[in-house]
Image 1: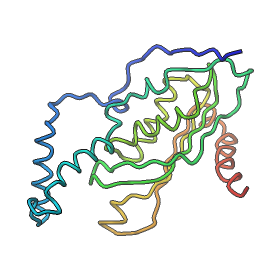
Image 2 (image 1 turned 90 degrees about the vertical axis):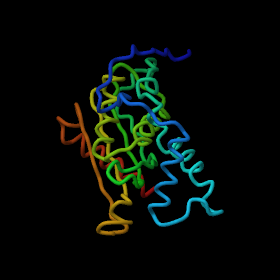
Image 3 (image 1 turned 120 degrees about the horizontal axis):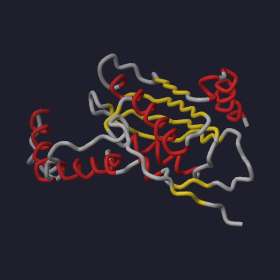
Length: 215
């Protein structure tokens, strides 16, 4: 029998999770002109052969880097599968690679996200959890905010009995500039529901992240 798919009613999102565009977005030509200015400020000639088309390439790359501003986590998580034979144990998608950009220096941070939840009203397709990570990663971010936004999106969409998110990333603003500590990583976590209230569930989540890597 085909699984029953429920489309959830869209709910208003908080400003922290889905930013509101309250300003005039520059034109592509204005964006390219800004890149030319930065090239000149860095000390090079934006009109030389190797750089003359760089503003166009940078603006095109920004469309990819920050595609999350054009996406909405509600739409990613809007279909819930209810016929799962009564499954109510943990769902974990581990080792989701992502790349994002620090909102303070606009340089990359790169890492992996691990996302788990206990179903209540149903489950979503596993790829959707990876997609919701990208929705928030493809924006100017802090790792702490991104962690919280992923949890909030899953909570709003699924009303699960608990959500756990762990993000492990290396920040180029630490390795390329400033203290220049290559290889250092930052870990952030957020637990709700059963993961927050029962330490054994946090321990189980962490053990599942570690235990299967040896296989």
